[in-house]
Image 1 (cartoon, protein in one colour):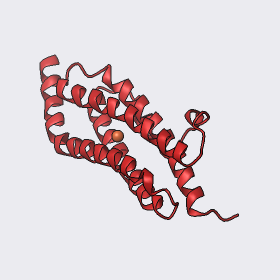
Image 2 (image 1 turned 30 degrees about the vertical axis):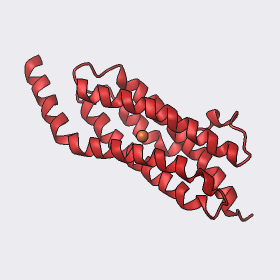
Image 3 (image 1 turned 60 degrees about the vertical axis):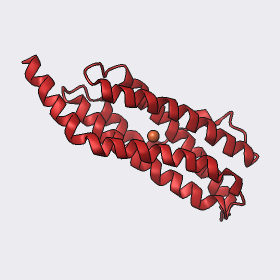
Image 4 (image 1 turned 180 degrees about the vertical axis):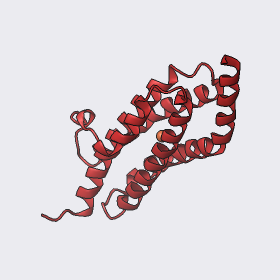
Length: 165
Ligand SMILES: [Fe+2]
């Protein structure tokens, strides 16, 4: 059975919603464990707030499509399982693994929002575009911050390890 652009858009919105639920879990798990890295903690906490707003926006988009959002929260997206597993590692270099995983996750989110924005017009849902673009900009800002701080966080980790030795 072929799907039209509107159907593809709705599936994409549901997948993005599942993605953001997973993002929220990852950020929540990290935010409680970052006392040694106050700048990272502040960014993660701020992005957690943005993520909740992004979930809200996706729910607004689904409602605009005439779709309910009650079952949306139950969906899972197995494609992110590897990232999650990586975050579960309890190695001493957790801060580094989380930085790499966050970098991957933010770029995954950026691609998902770009795809939804491209679909919004053929789906006949141009009105959702501004909401999706607002979320895309937040993801791009977060991805840029992570990208610009990989080296700094790595050297901070070295410092922490030296002090702990
Ligand atoms: Fe994000």
